[in-house]
Image (cartoon, rainbow, N blue to C red):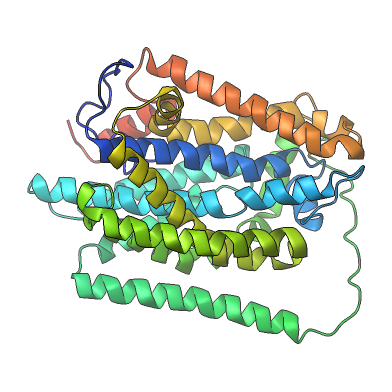
Amino acid sequence: MTESIVDPRPDAGRHRTPEEPARPSRLVALDVLRGIAILGTLGTNIWILTDPEGLLGYISALGGSAEGGWMWTERVLQQVAQGKFLGLLTIMFGIGLAIQQRSAVRGGRRWPGKYPWRAGLLFLDGLLNFVFVAEFDVLMGYAATGLVVAYVLATSERAQRRWLIIAASVHTAMLTLIALAIAFAPGGESAPREPLEPNPYADGSFWDLVLFRLEHAAIFRVEAIFVFAMSVALFLAGARLFRAGLFSAEGARIRKRLMLAGVIAAPIDLAAGILVGGDVVVFTRYGTAPFVAFGLLALVAEFYVRRPRVGFLGRRLTEVGRTALSCYILQNLVASAFCYGWGLGWAAKVAPGAYVPFTIGMYALVALIIVTAAHLWLRRFERGPVEWLWHSSYRVLARER
């Protein structure tokens, strides 16, 4: 969603007519995948935004708290989105770094060169998004991961492979330790969490929520620390797959292997999340979901290698992908305005039995707004508004003309 994964094409600002063939197909797949990842992350985040107690309430009720026979629908929909699109978005950032590195090498520039400025701007974007929009922001973590991986990509292929194996091993070890801790933990019912009183999500002002996020920043930022090793591994895997030709005709064998991994992981992930529920969310979100994300990545790449033209749906996803950073921030801001007390406050007004249909409706509404906004904006401008600000700031800081 930074310059590393937005507009890698030399003609990124030019509007393509529906009749014009896409060029080249792998770049079409990249745009579409960004769009899928952005709208997919909304599929997880919308359950947080429609919960009357925000992220804390969502975590407490994870696995299906709906009333009136909606529990299984809630479990299925949450599990379909849980972790897959976060994993896909993380992989796409790694691909973006590979694109930047390739561009630098072809232009005779040193790598990582001025990339730390890009990472710093992304961290600032994430910090502002965390404070003013969403406590579940991922941009700050991606900025830190990208800075590390940018320097790793400057090393040999052997060293990069070693980094990938170490990062994946650390992440696997952490999941294993959590599993052992749960297995050997003393039994007994845990005390229910006390309701938020006062509740800044339902009753507070915009500024009240800002202060609440700052006050509980240590809790809200735990995930970014926990997934750091996983993010490093997925960044490096994305970069390696891009260099190996995943989006070209020569990458057919790689795509088949990744799709097979996704086909194996998907039913395991869905069965565990739906039948067991929130008790295994750590293992599905951070264990099986990334494999499903790789399968989805390969499936889309395969589709656009075989079918280089972009249809109506592909064009809409491409537009969201080209304005990915703007759409990521805007979708959370729009949903917050509908659901939180500083806006219309709908989340607190919905009856418990209507929570699931309300959330489904909110997803459809916000997604429609985002897709429409991206389409209308790109009819007149080359970049999304946040992308433009980010790019302009980088040029000033890096002293580029």
